[in-house]
Length: 99
Ligand SMILES: [Zn+2]
Image (tube, rainbow, N blue to C red):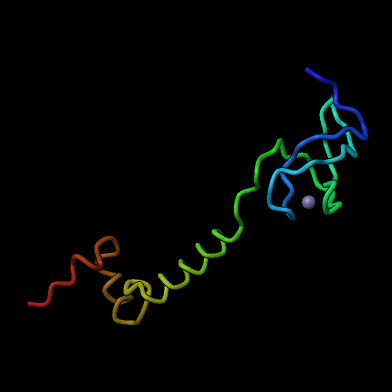
């Protein structure tokens, strides 16, 4: 295994360029790159071992989706549901038999 030194060229994923780019090693820890600087956009970041970070957009989408579910969910709503919940907290939906 090759020892990494300050100023070395190294491939890593750049979040700004959104792809694996040529980087410059700016910090070394245990003979491994700790921090790198993108040679294209000069963005400093932790060495990612050429892996892309998990997409944050999906998390936000998920949160929005959960909010929508909350507003639509009939069990999370009005007084009527809350009263029924006292009798059968586990099976609100199933026990709703109107005969
Ligand atoms: Zn970049």
